[in-house]
Length: 226
Image (cartoon, rainbow, N blue to C red; front, side, top):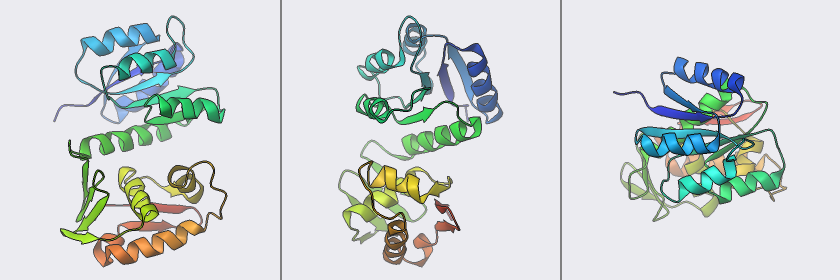
């Protein structure tokens, strides 16, 4: 199987080298650009780019304008890198169609894990919005879950929680991170509410599928395909 190609866009040479080294070590092909305009030129000339890692603050054309141009023609996954941590900047990124948003400084290993998760999510979902994980089949458009082809009735939040687990398969997720992503930024409830939802979700999925959701004591959960 050919390696997936990732476009890394950052005006800092050192940052590009760090990201490139970790991605190459993880068996990805990497191409680089030093600003948004260069990134657009490369992206529209190369139809094999599977994901873009994009810095926000760059000369010539910044990350925001670059994403806007890309989204006019493509749904390629985009992970934004930025030194700014204000919530409105992060929300702006998601409004523009950014898939992930990582604040500098960051761990290159975490970046690779996020890239892996976004690509799994992208390539595991067919054109009809169906994701398959083990004996679980999720139809996102119909908002329906099947285990061994039998429909499972889930509440809205249980459905969203399961989708989040599956789309981040293999990644350890803290309770706080789950709350921020499934219950949104305005949720101020106890993080332990996750435990209650996970317990119900496991029960409804049954032993085989439910056992894929592993507890990480003192932290949160991780879904591992059996």
